[in-house]
Image 1 (cartoon, rainbow, N blue to C red):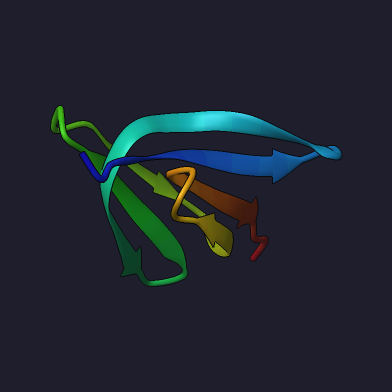
Image 2: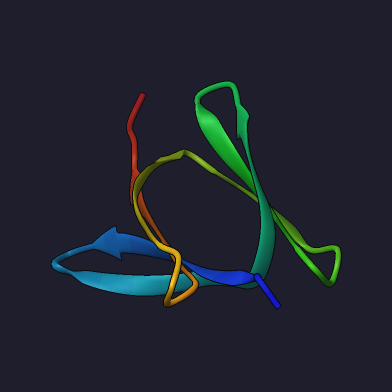
Length: 64
Protein backbone atom coordinates (compact mmCIF):
# COMPACT_ATOMS: atom_id res chain seq x y z
CA UNK A 1 0.00 0.00 0.00
CA UNK A 2 1.23 3.48 -0.83
CA UNK A 3 -1.05 5.66 1.26
CA UNK A 4 0.42 8.30 3.54
CA UNK A 5 -0.57 10.15 6.68
CA UNK A 6 -0.83 13.94 6.44
CA UNK A 7 0.40 16.12 9.29
CA UNK A 8 0.01 19.85 9.86
CA UNK A 9 3.09 21.45 11.38
CA UNK A 10 2.11 23.90 14.11
CA UNK A 11 3.51 25.26 17.36
CA UNK A 12 6.75 23.34 16.97
CA UNK A 13 4.91 20.02 16.68
CA UNK A 14 2.80 18.11 14.23
CA UNK A 15 -0.91 17.29 14.21
CA UNK A 16 -2.33 14.36 12.28
CA UNK A 17 -5.00 15.69 9.89
CA UNK A 18 -5.74 12.61 7.77
CA UNK A 19 -4.69 8.98 7.48
CA UNK A 20 -4.57 6.80 4.36
CA UNK A 21 -4.20 9.78 2.01
CA UNK A 22 -3.87 8.71 -1.59
CA UNK A 23 -4.50 12.00 -3.43
CA UNK A 24 -3.29 15.57 -2.84
CA UNK A 25 -4.48 18.15 -5.37
CA UNK A 26 -3.99 21.92 -5.52
CA UNK A 27 -7.30 23.74 -5.25
CA UNK A 28 -6.66 27.46 -5.67
CA UNK A 29 -4.61 28.50 -2.65
CA UNK A 30 -5.49 25.32 -0.77
CA UNK A 31 -4.83 21.59 -0.96
CA UNK A 32 -7.54 18.99 -1.32
CA UNK A 33 -6.68 15.73 0.47
CA UNK A 34 -8.59 12.52 -0.25
CA UNK A 35 -8.11 9.17 1.41
CA UNK A 36 -8.93 5.61 0.42
CA UNK A 37 -12.20 5.77 2.41
CA UNK A 38 -13.58 8.65 0.32
CA UNK A 39 -13.05 11.29 3.00
CA UNK A 40 -11.91 14.72 1.84
CA UNK A 41 -10.36 17.75 3.54
CA UNK A 42 -9.60 21.14 2.07
CA UNK A 43 -6.72 22.84 3.86
CA UNK A 44 -5.21 26.27 3.32
CA UNK A 45 -1.70 24.88 3.45
CA UNK A 46 1.40 24.19 1.42
CA UNK A 47 3.51 21.07 1.29
CA UNK A 48 6.46 21.47 3.65
CA UNK A 49 8.04 18.09 2.92
CA UNK A 50 7.36 14.49 1.96
CA UNK A 51 8.87 11.42 3.59
CA UNK A 52 7.94 8.79 1.06
CA UNK A 53 9.68 5.86 2.73
CA UNK A 54 7.83 6.65 5.98
CA UNK A 55 4.55 7.48 4.15
CA UNK A 56 4.29 10.97 5.66
CA UNK A 57 3.15 14.28 4.17
CA UNK A 58 4.04 17.40 6.14
CA UNK A 59 1.94 20.52 5.54
CA UNK A 60 2.25 24.08 6.81
CA UNK A 61 -0.80 26.34 7.11
CA UNK A 62 -0.89 29.44 4.92
CA UNK A 63 -2.67 32.71 5.57
CA UNK A 64 -4.55 34.97 3.26
